[in-house]
Image 1 (tube, one colour):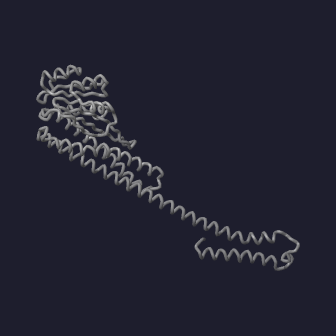
Image 2: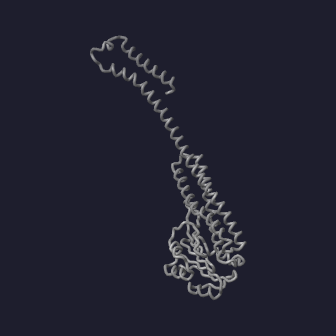
Image 3: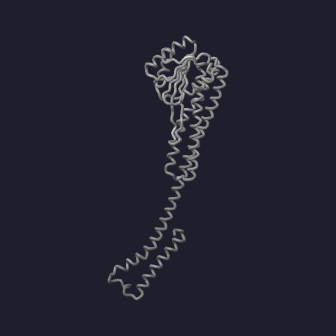
Length: 333
């Protein structure tokens, strides 16, 4: 069902749980409370209903009904449209999985729309309902609580990335010739970059919200809570940037180590080629002499000379010994 949870809150306490959008609209007016309407991939009819009831801006509705939005905050009169990109880390596959949640926050209402399974807004709702002094602050308190949950969920993601970086560093200096290491580093760098695109905009988003505190008379305690969220997301953002820098350096170092290894292999191969070439030359000289005297021409006086055979053997030994001495002197052998 697209409608996940509807609630009407009065003075920080849940007083009604409407079963339909129309009932939520009616009870909100009658009880003079604020409504938190939770939707999951709403239908066009539900979009039309909530946009008319809360006078949502058409551009915000268009963006809200379209998935794969970047993290952002936009203000339309007194209504905020917020897009958040919650994340979780699949350590086995070294992948960051992203969700998407849209929030419409206005005077007397919050509309939360999940386009993926995360985050668990039911846990956020339970937390707020257990602290009525916070929920009493209204729709801005819901925005804070959702932001806080999303940022808290970023902590295990960056911790998982950092853990994999540690493994890469151990592997880098333990077995730098692993043919899959470059691919692992490159893919993890891409995951860290994608995660950074979800995290970094939150800093500017919260700063933009803070600039409106005075104008929209945001409660002092809520301002303090939002400052804590800003501190947390700034810390996560810095860790993401550090992880990207480490992965970039790891890829550079791995490339250098692989190049050095290939150079060393090439040099060893060159040494082997020298040795093989040297021995081939040593063997070639006696073979050449033996080949000449093995042609058995009639006009070869050495064949009938008593010292012909010792001469041939001596030439073979002399050539072989001379080449051996030369190659040894040049460290080819």
